[in-house]
Amino acid sequence: MSIMGRLLGSAVSRWGEDPWARGSWSLIGRHGTPQDRVTLGTPVGDRLRIAGEATHPTRAGMTHGAYEQGVAAAAWAADLGHRRVEVVGAGMAGLAAARALTQRGVDVRIWEARDRIGGRAAAAEVAGAAFDLGANWLQQYDDNVLARLAERLGLTTVVTDFRDPLVLGGEPIPHGLEEDLRERLAVAAPGASIADVLDRWLRDPAPWTPDEIRRFIDAEIVMDSGAPLSWLSARHGVEPGVGQGDRWIVGGYRLLTTHLAEGLDIRLNRPVRHLRVGPDGVLLTSGDDAMQVDAVIVTAPVPVLAAGVVTFEPPLPESHRTALSHLGAGRVEKVILRFDRRFWPEHGYYRVHGPADTCISEWLDATVADGVPTLVGLFAGPWLDTLWTGDDADIAARAAEVIRAAVNG
Ligand SMILES: Cc1cc2nc3c(=O)[nH]c(=O)nc-3n(C[C@H](O)[C@H](O)[C@H](O)COP(=O)(O)OP(=O)(O)OC[C@H]3O[C@@H](n4cnc5c(N)ncnc54)[C@H](O)[C@@H]3O)c2cc1C
Image (tube, rainbow, N blue to C red; front, side, top):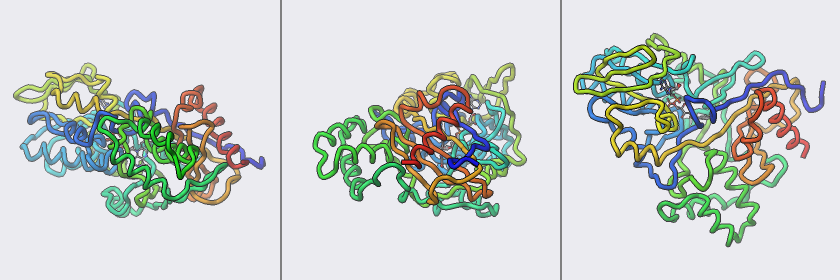
């Protein structure tokens, strides 16, 4: 038995290069505001509506926000009297929309590009148990519709205290920095980026040291966004979410998505390429299939839409295209590592800074799932470009070295 633990199994995410995600979750760029989310989700006439996490003005980037937007889009279509509605995407928003439409007696079908449901809520089976490679926590637990569903289903959830991570190989972040940052962001000029605010702050850092400020930005912004600080909006780029009663689901989010998908007509491996909206309905095209229906709800992620993977005829209105251009997504990747023994201190959640500024990883101890020592690592920052190369086993081995080195000090 190795003192530093032998790997029993691993899994690695690749959200950045996944053609149906192209990033992790939506964010507001320096020229955007939350209104862009509202605009993107505003129905295009009576037959087309974009839903999904990116369209939620206050719960973006989270599964329950996606779910709520799916339900809202379903109500819109049903209230208009549409009898036959197609949904693009079997992620949380698409599943919620299809379920709500079915409950209203509407004939609905989901077209999903991948060979699985769940979208960015995706599990991997590693050494005998399933863990999440995408969405991990039920955030804002007390006010989260999916948390209520998890409770009804009798799922086991475990609290994570993001406010008290064990910082491995470094000093904890001093109190007071968060308030200082929030005040600076609130008064940032429209169009300013986080990098602009940071540059100014570092020129006059007292009472903090530049290192404390940089580490705080890495922990609070780089880790929570995975986006370049020069792109992310200072005023609107830090949105609510993490640190509001988060709990993870033992067995993973798939316990929710499989439940939501029950009884739905879902076509897998069917990427939708073209939507032609006319006065009598929408013609949806996927490969050789073409379907004329009353209305379509599109839940593809922002970067997928921005890349023109789905073409619209007529094109999306200028307002929607502008909103899309103001939004984007960062890149946070995950690794699941299962070991034959625990070599890290017992704490629950860990933060590792470095090797350079704007490179950070955080780690969840998920051993409680089945007793096998398990770490779920989240990585963000430019080092992903070098860390996330080669095959999954290479990446997992590199990630394991990061946590081993941090534990060793
Ligand atoms: C690493 C990571 C960690 C996260 N952690 C959390 C967390 O802890 N808590 C939390 O609440 N949220 C978290 N999130 C965010 C959360 O996963 C998303 O907000 C949510 O799952 C989005 O749901 P959605 O339905 O809007 O989009 P998606 O889940 O992306 O679903 C869209 C679906 O559309 C499909 N699609 C795309 N294009 C087409 C096309 N042309 N034709 C047909 N189908 C198409 C996709 O394959 C996908 O299945 C995390 C995300 C990532 C990547």
